[in-house]
Image (cartoon, rainbow, N blue to C red; front, side):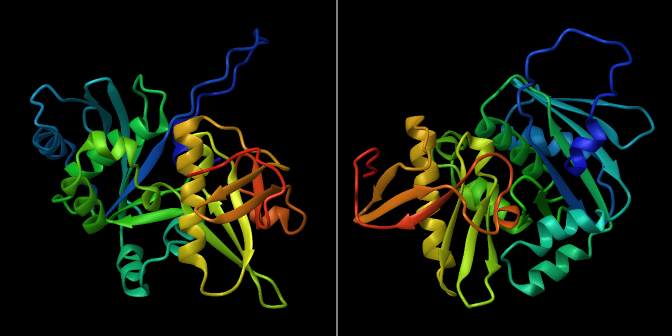
Length: 286
């Protein structure tokens, strides 16, 4: 269970109850600071970011906790005057692909704000957009970066500001920033090749993908996986082992994982992507 989910999980029932419907997946992020920020100042900045004077904050008196409300969104926040637990830093800062100097600056955080979506939107993209709008509001209040456990990633504040001030929110929902909300991990085989495997694709209803490649192929592999992710999100297609696809002129086949599954598999389903000659036309991407 992720760090922010441990904070917000409900206590176990003490009596036998009828099964309840599965809960809607709720997204969460962690904002990194040198010191816990003032939530009221965050509210003021949020109103400016949204250009919405009706945004509100229900703050628990005498604490660094509360809930931000804007439009259909509600984001529960808890401020903690401590660095992230080491295992969470490993899953986010350590596994990100930023230069080491950038990682070192993020490791210097001494406080964090856990943000958990509790609004009415079920689409992960809408939840994440709301969460990152809140992050943007703290951009000038000492924010260092945004850690995302589900994506095994972290994003420096300057990148968040650049993306969310240069593009409209409506455009970001359609052309969602996969580089922020997912990640590509590398697992080296002893004989030289590298397994590339995604994290975070499951939050958009897609399987995570893995591909056995060579060193130096991370960028093109992530582009390929992102094309597959966008196809699944836009079409609602359900890719399965045995299906084939074509991305550009590249023929692909999906198979079940056959080695190192415990390392490659994140949450949800995992499909291995192989580059082959087309054998069937189950799926064609353009």
